[in-house]
Image (cartoon, rainbow, N blue to C red; front, side):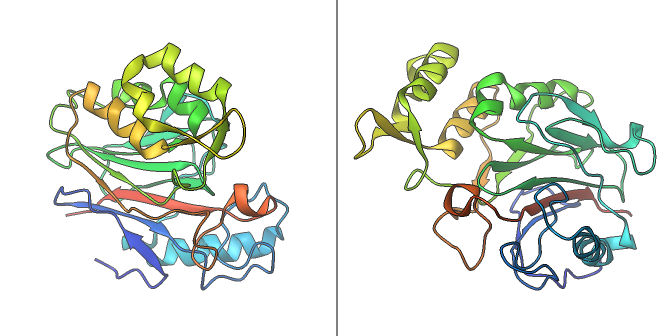
Length: 252
């Protein structure tokens, strides 16, 4: 396997043959406020510098394969990477493949990136899970799309805004309570601001996976809003770049 030369957090998926990670923001070519390893081509960065950054990522992957990217909209659409034409960038918020050597990716800057993997490394999926996508069922849609049974699947949560920083309105809490019932109550705590709550994105995602029978879940435990040196954060900075969470089945 070609070693990753960028600064990354390796995903602890717990399935042999799955290679996955989330990038940190250092060692790229973009200037502030996108400094420096920004992969977002929709945030106002110099397109040429975004291309250079994506080339760095491509060259770090086994086989130097370019990841398949998405146009993310906080929805529930899921695509199979191997069904896409070369260079096609579909509107979707999750992507999967069962083809070894093909890399799939999502971009985040506070939302929760989720790596899902089949127990026998027969498929890998990457999910972009903000609160809207979680509430709408992006995890459920992804697991419905992967081939065969997802029994025994494993999950890893990459860096995302933590319950220390993710303040939401009462309407967000009400949306989850209406959608999933009282089990999510513990994922919200009262904030200092009147009528506001601190929300636990990763906690809600873990509950959804548990309800679907997936209990082997690991977590980076990193908050994007807290660590400005390591992560982009939309909540913290407004205008900012995007990290990538990438997964692939290693070629034999």
